[in-house]
Amino acid sequence: MKLNISILTTLYMSLSMVSASEVCDCMSVCSLKGDPHLRSFWMKQASPTNAQVHSTDVTIFSSNSFQVRAKAGPGPATSKAKGNYLQHVQVGGRNIQASQCQSDTQKWVSHHNVGDDTSLSVTVRCAYPLHQHDALHLDVSLSLHNKHCEAIPDFKTWAQSKFGGLCTTQNGFGGSSTHGRKECREEQPTPKPTHKPNHPSSPATKSPTTPSTKAPSAPKRTKSPTTPATKAPSGPKRTKSPTPPAQDDNIITLAPSMNAGENMTCTIQGDPHANCFRDDQEWFQIYPQQHNKHVMLYEMPGRLEAIGRIGGFISPTSKEWVHYVEQLLIKKDGEWQVEIDYETNCEPRLPGDKLDATLQNSRLAPGHTEYIWDNEALVISWECVVDQDARPQGMKIVFNKQLNTSYAFEQKHNSGICAACNAAQPYMGKLPAATTLKKSLRGNF
Image 1 (cartoon, rainbow, N blue to C red):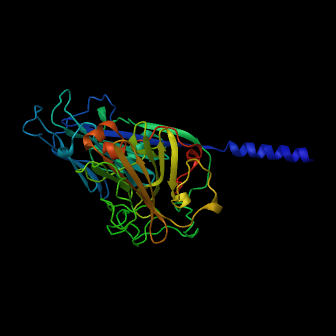
Image 2 (image 1 turned 180 degrees about the horizontal axis):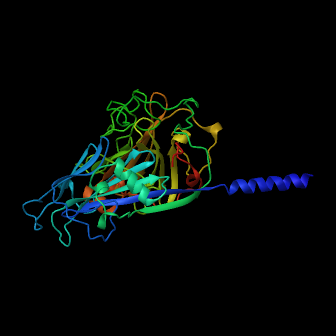
Image 3 (image 1 turned 135 degrees about the horizontal axis):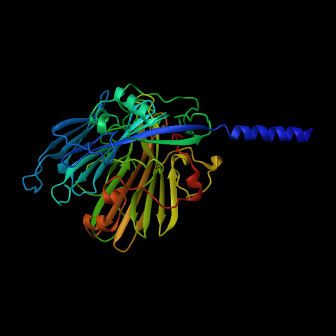
């Protein structure tokens, strides 16, 4: 009898394991480039309808109150290339000018929730005219992604009924193109993850709440990032320009003692935004790759690497993705040195060390670590910022660098978000074993 029960149990488990269902996503890319030529969501890459857009003010994409717009015009008077190129792009409330371009590697990336199970990624790049090393202009590409999609023709019909702008309304060659990409995968049915992190100081049954606003915002500009604010979703609040380091927030702002030199500061905080080492650089937002949540915050090749892990959740109010830095990893001379995150209440420990709930400190306290070389010194300070309900608002990380050379030397020899001053800095190396198994605090990835 015991054998029969065992066989039945095994059979039941086997049947439950094959109950996976196929889930498909549909996606397509649109671009407006050069002088400028359009490739809509429904045009093939080599379509003869990559037609030139003659209007100088166009709406590329629109969804309710969200728009991506572009204006074209001639470049500087010294430009060799004649004709109209994109000089201004507006993505939601953000304005990007070709005059901001300093190299053809510069770009701005943003992600937006534009409907149920539908997201839009927008990339604005600085580019030279074709075959000419002339004045820089802007190119724009948009990627529309819809989950739980049945077929590309249905995806197109649905998108054209819901969204506006050239990317959506312009058909391919012959007017009947259904160009796009469909990807399917097998998924085991699992309970839907909650947006609320299991934070030790937050009630387990409390759901995130927020006032009705257009988008979540990062902590308001105050003397301290921990100043009580209005309730918000469990994650960092969005803001166009996050709070710079204050004088009374326990963040170390002095570099280790060494010979007289120049100090540079880079700050990562909020949802998350970065302000790099370059003096005239404005705040810019950073995002993770879809399948890689780790970014290189700062790297001194062969000496030091500082890596951040970005978590995220969809705001229940704005329905937009909100991201924030939830973990800091530091490696020195090729060896892991320290790991700090919200899971241990910001208490530093050896990377990969297993978590022991009985030893965790219930108090969130800031900290810092110092490194000194022959002609350079660095202080890395951190703080796990929370709101008045002890919900994570994103780590605040400050890199204070002292060196006897200029920023040009820093940019040439080092890398990462702080040195390169751009957001496209994914970390592609190995991680401590235990770290690779951890889930985001929100379980949303």
